[in-house]
Amino acid sequence: MQTTLKASYTNHYRRGLIKLLDVLEFRSSNHAHRQVIESLALVARYANAGNTTYYPLGETVPVHKAMGGDWAEVVHRTDKRGRCRVVRMVYEVVAFQALRDQLKCKEIWVVGADKWRNPDEDLPQDFDARRAENYRELRKPLDAAVFVDELREQMTAELTLLNDRMPKLPWLDIAERKSGAIRLTAAEAQPEPRNLRRVKAEVQRRWGIVPLVDMLKEAVLRTGCLDAVTSVCGGGSLSPEVLAGHDVYGREVDHLVSFSLPPLPLTSPTLHARSDDC
Image 1 (cartoon, rainbow, N blue to C red):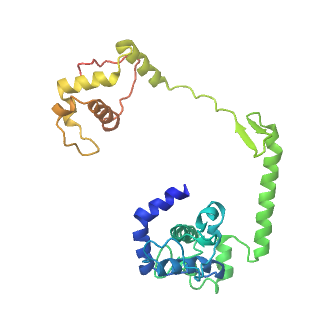
Image 2 (cartoon, rainbow, N blue to C red):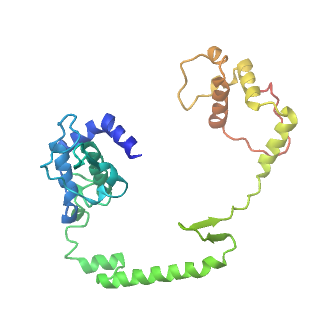
Image 3 (cartoon, rainbow, N blue to C red):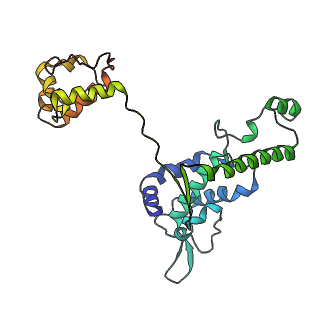
């Protein structure tokens, strides 16, 4: 997966993402996330380095947590002299992924943006001055320790309830496996709608095993009854005469009938339509 993502980035996405670094300014209110911003600065500095595989040996390459996990074995490579090097293109992919993840939770923000603005601007400017009033409106305690204790008690109570009830559930089985496994029994089949049974029975009685879409196709070709129906796609470039020789026309008819015509209420198990009444 990492190899495929790197290829997509190199061949397509890189050009646009690199340009964003020249337009947008990224910042963070938390020093712990500075490594990602510094990695983006490194990416921008070597953006036009051509086909350079590795960063120069003397270059300081910022390390952040996104470089671990599955990417750890890909972002580093041993060169011909046995030295551990940082692969430039892979490093860029990891840096942009880290940026994406931290933008979502505003650990990193964009200067002058709206949705991705500084999280300090999300609160009213007088929030601190009216803290007691605001917390009262939010129905939250002013003391952070009290808030954490209440949340911990709620989670403990709910998890205890889950732990006590799970062994008594007849439709749940927790198997003993190395990685653990929770298996749920299949849900009971819901009763088939009465009108659907009527439609199926009548179609089976009239046409048997003949595909109904073929019947519809022939009816449309003979009567032209769908000329008054507009496709949600706005029409096509081929005439009905040309489409008549293609199997796709049957699917076109099926699409029009399924999505363009309103459903008809079935008040009786008997259907009063014939194949030539389209």
